[in-house]
Amino acid sequence: MRLTKSDFLHYLACDKSFWLSRHKPALYPSSAPDAYGQFLAKQGDEVETMAKRVLDGCDFQQVFEDSHGVYARADAVRRHGDESIDIYEVKSTTQSIRDHINDFAFQVVAARRSGEKVNRIFGVHLKKEFVRDGDIDPKQLIKITDMTDDVFAVVPEIETLIESALALLAQDRIDEAGCDCRYLSRSNHCATFDYFNPDIPDPSVYTLPRMNGKRLAGFVDDGRYDLADIGLDEVTDSQGRVLEAAHNREPVVDHRFLAEFLNTCAYPLYFLDYETISYAIPKLDRTTPYQQIPFQYSLHVVHSDGRTDHFEYLAECLELPQNLIAHMMRHIGPQGSVISWNKSFEMSRNKEMALMYPEFADFLLGVNARMVDLMDVFAKGYVDIAFNGSTSIKKVLPVMAPDLSYDDLAVGNGTDAMMGWQTFIAMEDGTWRDTLCDDLLKYCKLDTCAMVRLLEEAQKINALAN
Ligand code: SF4
Image (cartoon, rainbow, N blue to C red; front, side, top):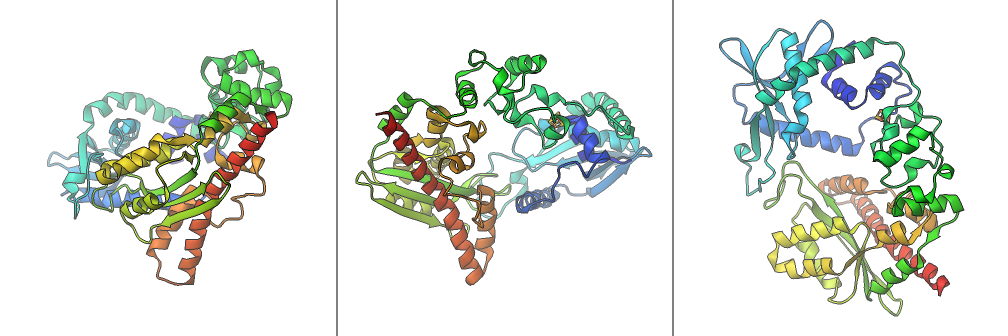
């Protein structure tokens, strides 16, 4: 059986999941790449094309394969007169290239096993600090890092692990009862967790937020997965709220928190949500690799007399956000709270835009100073086990306001919005473009409409206590 680099990295991430994907593919939850997956692949291709321009004299997509099926395809190889080679691996990342050391070591082992003499290996990646200014000079964008010493140091270990992966692949059976992620929080579980752990109830100890470390290990070692078997004195405050909601089979309400939160909200209330896009290779001057560029916002304004206004902006082409900011400045006044969900996202975009446009900095940073996070209400003030231990608006809304739903929307989440907008700006004028425009506007509008409604629900719950 062939062992590719992707297989090996899968094996390193999880041997059981790797084995299942190869021996019982029908049971392995996988899906064809969606529009976002294709978008990311295209970004990778663009980085590779750019990298080729700085790798003169290399052969590209060089394959190494040995008689045991160890198979690698190097992005670029430079051959020397003494028959040795240098390997170049392209990564569309601005993060530490050292995160890919196992990946590089696999290439070296595969090359050696196919009879090559590897001289050096380099990581080819993006400079985080690159700022586009006109046509891109690849030498300014692309960084080449010599990884040879670090990679050669781990090669013996990787050779052993490759043998282990090949041995596992040859096995017809493995112990399918349980898996190591029982000791890790839900965010670490892959899609095969349920297959290997059919005995875990739902909800379970993994439904509790940030459940990990020694606390989780204790419950796993005791075999206590059911929330009914866990005491409130054994968990943190935030976990306790979810646990209590499960025990009582009714929402847990912290009236003091709710009252304090609502008191901090000053009218008019501005409910704000951005949609953004980012590109590995900056497409606009003044932007950096992977910079988030807001292309759309929705704003609901609720006045103290109950009147509600709605404003929105959708860029018609790829552009810097100065028009979006100017549009917002016409509708967000100097007084009143700005309400968002998971406010760190909107605040980060505002800080970035303030750096790009010092002339708008007072406005943008002023918005941040007035921003409150409605998500906190459903993390601390009102917790229902039906949220499934999550504070995502997509989990909270169906419970609190089932009449408002994302399900029927053609654009139903942030990724859809990003991909839809990519299509939208590339389309000719016409009915299809108009329809897509409507779909994009409806989605972002529902995000802020949902926040308006959720705040109203919080107000009603608070009123009941008074
Ligand atoms: S959930 Fe289980 S199968 Fe999935 S990565 Fe974790 S240990 Fe592996």
